Length: 327
Image (cartoon, rainbow, N blue to C red; front, side):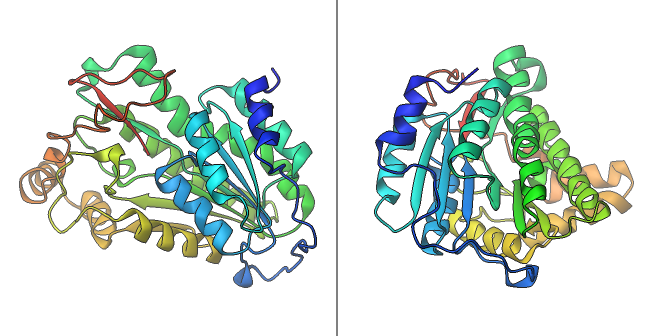
C-alpha cells in the first residue's frame, strides 16, 4: 500500500523534501569514536511531541543534513516540522501509524527514495496501558501495545538496515526500552512484556551486526525508569529512583548513541534493581521491590495523558481502568 495523499502532502508541502541539504558533505569517516550527527540523515519515530521532538531538535542543533519525522498524529507532526524548518536542516514529515506493517513499509520506501537510508535511526515511539492484565482489551490494548512497542522497531529497522549495511559507512540505531523490561511491574504487564522483547531483540541485533562484520553500525538500548512525561502521569517514583527529566534523558541517550554504547540504564538504581533481581530469592526480591523500593506500587496511581489532551483519533482513549498514554 502506498503513502496516503495526506502523507504525500505533508512530506512535500511544508517545504522540506527529504534530500541532503545543498553543500552538506556526506560523512565518510570510519572512526566510530568520532561519530556525530553533522551532515547525516536522522529518522525519529514518535517525533511530533515529547521526547521524540526533543531528539529531532537535538539533531537539528547538531547540524544534521536531514531530519525525518514519523508520527501517527499528522497535525502535531506538521507543527513540529514547521517549527524545525528554516534551520539549515532539511526536515521531512511522514504521518504513519507504525502499528501497521503496510504503512511502515510504504513510508520507509518513500524515505529511501527521497533521502536514502538514515544514518541515525531512533526508535522512540511507544504507548502504555495501565491496568490489570484481565482488564486489557484484546485489540486496543494487548495487540496494539505489542505492535507499537515491540514489533514496530523491528519492522522499521528491518526496512532500513540492508541499505544501511550496503552503504558501508558508520551508522547508529537507538532503541528506547524501559526499566520495566528488566523487572516485573503490576498494572503494566503487557507494556512490560513489550519492553522485555525490545531489550532482547535490540541487544541480539547488536551482537549479530558485530558477528557479521558490520561493526560500524552500533546499536544502543536505552533502559530508563519513569520519565516525567504525560505518558507516565500519576506514577509513584520508587525509592531512590526520582522521575527523570525528558531533556536530561535525551542528552544522555544521544551521547551514548553517538559513542556506540551497547546499553544505557537510567538512573543508577535501574542497574542495581536488575542485579538484585538476579541474585535474591523470589520471596526476598518481592519484599525488596514491593515493600522497600515500592516498584510494585508505582503504577497504583497512574493516570496517563490527561483527558484534556486526548490521544490520536485512531487510538482509543483509555478508561479509568485502562488509561493509555503516549511518549
